[in-house]
Image 1: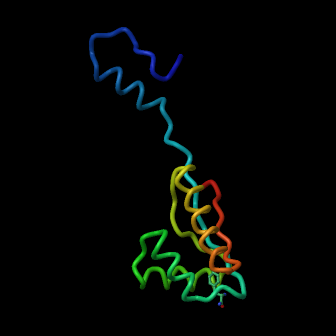
Image 2 (image 1 turned 120 degrees about the vertical axis):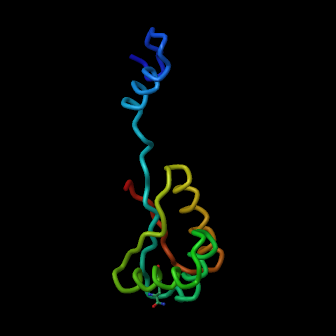
Length: 107
Ligand code: TYC
């Protein structure tokens, strides 16, 4: 049955419960930064503040995690928001001629 088909009943709470059980949440995507040898640490910190709303301390922690471990998660979003973050960050890095890579992956 279509997810929005209404079961014939006079009790609206019954209908809501049946829909809740069937509608699954949207797929979510991690947006991550990858390490490289050239992008300045300060630029990465500024990206995390500008595009992911982090304060300076959190941004520095995430930047250092990427620097040490090769990859770090910046946030988890629905597909369209994640894709927009990747495009914005990649464009900004390109504009500033840094090789910083930003990627998304289903969480
Ligand atoms: N490894 C870079 C350096 O030593 C810093 C860096 C951190 C680059 C995180 C990219 O996503 C990155 N300047």
